Amino acid sequence: MNKPTLTLSIRSFSYKKGIPEDQNGHGGGFVFDCRSIHNPGRYEPYKKLTGRDESVITFLKEKSKIDDFLNDIYALVDRAVAQYMSRNFEHLMVSFGCTGGQHRSVYSADQLANHVKEKFGIKVDLIHVEQEAKNWIN
Image (cartoon, rainbow, N blue to C red; front, side):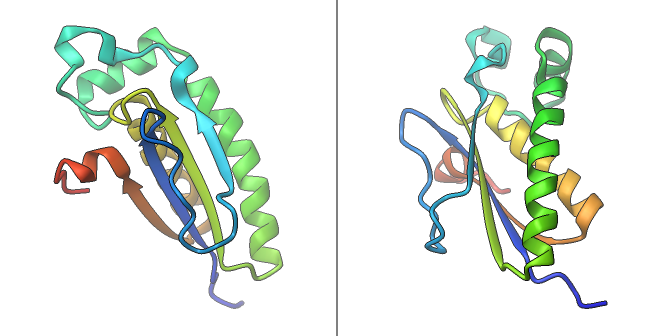
């Protein structure tokens, strides 16, 4: 069997600064709006944290429908990835936006990256746009 050639580019971003451009020229793929998920960033204890911090993850899991949201996204993206792989496509992009690009979108992007690596074994290019602009190491 041939090694998968598909690269899935995943981005988290802030809607305040705009949807990330697809550097591969394919039009940008999926864009998911995380703003419907209860925002931990509205509460003081979480303001300086990100979607990778345990207390933020606990908040999202206990005070929002983040798991339902992500399961719906997994179903859509899994079908696209399978089709792209079967057609030997080389690139697909998925972006997650929220208000500040710090909590909900970061968590969602990380979860999708883990999901597709485990399920499909494809290359994932993960960038947290707002966090990396703050010199955050991914």
